Amino acid sequence: MGSAKSVMMILLLAMVIASCATVIDMSVVSYDDNHHLTAGSGLRQSGFDADAVLIFESWMIKHAKVYDSVAEKERRLTIFKDNLRFINNRNAENIGYRLGLTRFADLSLHEYNDICHGADPGPPKHHVFMTSSDRYKTSAGDVLPKSVDWRNEGGMTEVKDQGNCRSCWAFSTVGAVEGLNKIVTGELVTLSEQDLINCNKDNNGCGGGKVETAYEFIVNNGGLGTNNDYPYEAVNGVCDGHIKENNKNVMIDGYENLPSNDELSLRKAVAHQPITAVIDSSSREFQLYESGVFDGICGTNLNHGVVVVGYGTENGRDYWIVRNSWGKIWGEAGYVKMARNIANPRGLCGIAMRASYPIKNSFSTDISSMA
Image (cartoon, rainbow, N blue to C red; front, side, top):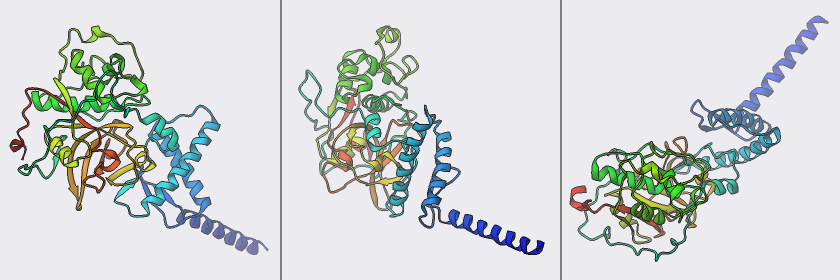
């Protein structure tokens, strides 16, 4: 009798082990040591749910996420699972880029758009919208480098993080000014977005703003202070003009707009300096972008300020190197490679629609020096 019981126990244990093994083997995804998704061999809802909870807990630790209540955590987990399914399904299609569990993986698309976008697409107030300049108009004799990356020239400060403040307009403006200042003076200085947020009253701080108005403020209000003197706080604050009084501020002489819907002019401009662009980053794929040349779904409803810092070609696919302001743990260390030379003259996500750049009168644009 004891022997029969032992046999039954062994058979039951074997069935349990086999059942567990099946669930693990059929998991939709796993999460490696670098917090990247890897596809499993099939779809089994029970296995997916169990894995998703473990992945969610690991993701929470990585991103230091804490929720106010159990109910809120459950709500975030539901959204997270939905994004996880979307990521796994899109990556399984062998697209030319990868999606992953970014810092926004617990946000619905609506929430992501509310938090992350702050570039106002309309013309600046009290001002006739500046017409485009021919400074970087292309001509038959142009000889441009095959690839450009201002990071390799020491022209970019560390990637920054706008946090929950809708201040992308300030970060894109500051990034372009930092780059031009390095080109002209040889000195890379980390400048202050908070200066713009607090003092540029024609914009709306964490409520959003326009890059053109930010450039005008820098020209008309004594330049920009450094981040050390005026550190970023990710909230609206009171302007303190005394902070900059005794410091050497970085000045520009003006700004210009590139011709609209002209990627060739944008390429020529980027060969000379980092360029501010306003794009439509409101798609779910952009929200969850991890790596590769992004050519996913996006429109031309311009809502997010970025800096175009270079261009190149990867496996026959032309791309822009675009600096974001969502920290180094989004995308490729804070950057995204966006498809270049697409059929739509507006460029992917409207990148060629509204590009502009700061100018310094001492800055030469001799194209031959860049070839």
